[in-house]
Image (cartoon, rainbow, N blue to C red; front, side):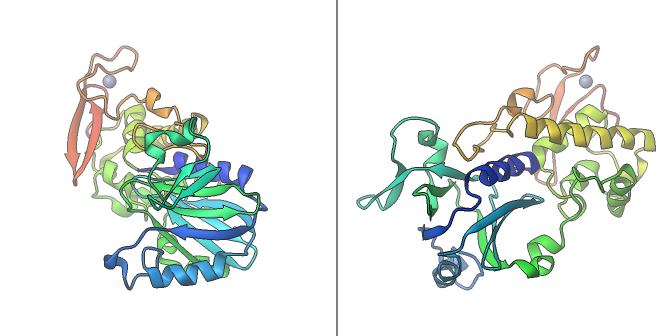
Length: 305
Ligand SMILES: [Zn+2]
């Protein structure tokens, strides 16, 4: 699932490419009887309303809140996109094929033709004739709109914890947030969006490896000196993820359809049975399952508090 660095990479791409463009049309083939009464575009009745509100509006700027993409429009509305497992936005020239009822990149080569970019289920046509397409293999994404001024009351946003890359996110802030789940296992607490927003499976594994903390450690037992290391590791790992254009170990692609490079920088995530890459460490990376999610860690240098 895209985490903070992937969403940040997408948002930066959107600000470079679609700011100031007008949405002239919107198309979807997301349709699900499960969503019949839901407030998201998978509900055809909701989609009709969505279309009415957003077509004609100009895109002001795009922001990130946790793992959510927020596209602010000039008509006082915001489009919220949560990419969930496999969703990602793509910008380019697309052509609709009436036989297959789907969109294809107009140019038949290049990154947009990558197999992971072919599951287009939502398309915004922009005033510069480009399309903003949303590829989503497993169709788990969430898309809806709200009045921008109501952002603080939106369920998906109001419960989110602070963003770990902001100036306000000090060491004391991190400590205070984590201690809200004092008896929790650190790996799970780090991934809890209500405690800290934006961290998922990949980056939690990597920051714990770097901070030498075992993923099963109980939060209240972790000494302050180790928490200080975690604080530094959290910010370093997330920034590195952004610097490398996100992680494409799974489906993630940037808005040009290209892979990020953070997957080649992993020290723990999905390195099961490999020797630990920390200098002087003779450990091996192990995989365990915590609350249905896998955790990868070094069996030597990560202390179980
Ligand atoms: Zn190690």
